[in-house]
Length: 230
Image 1 (cartoon, rainbow, N blue to C red):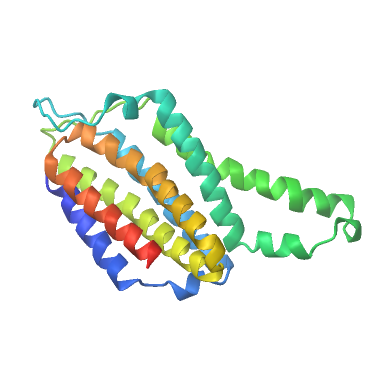
Image 2 (image 1 turned 180 degrees about the vertical axis):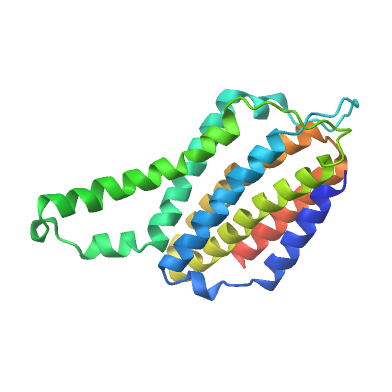
């Protein structure tokens, strides 16, 4: 019941400390490696959550059914994948490099590798999330199983790791843009955070539908928005 509260509290502590913000301003291979690892752990965390059996205890705090619809989840997972691809491209310096390149100075092979194959590989990697988020999974970890709470909390913590990186990355990007673009980017960032990190929690709340989990999620999102904006 209090697993999400614990995971959200830890995430809020890290966000308040704003660890690592400056290091994400400059694209680097290390940052992209960390992003790739956290994304992979996010996929593992979502898969772990989906392996949990739903509670049979009636509750008024069940998530809305439309958010659990398989088609809605696939669309949200696709949007998240495209946004992750953009983050990877930034950390690998793709945008900065593309502005300086001239296709006329590149041979056909290098041009294809840079403009087609590399983005295609990132897109394929980003679409992994659709498989773990929106395709059938056998939920075989019963509520009576002693490892149920451990799997639930660990799954949430793996999701939170990606949330922390994303919030700090967005904050550093906002530091680099002018005031005239800031409002638009803040708005898009808020939408991105909702699309990316509400669905995994909805999957969890479907299985453990208690009020404390919704409250801690609301507070975590508020802190995330506060860090992004200020």
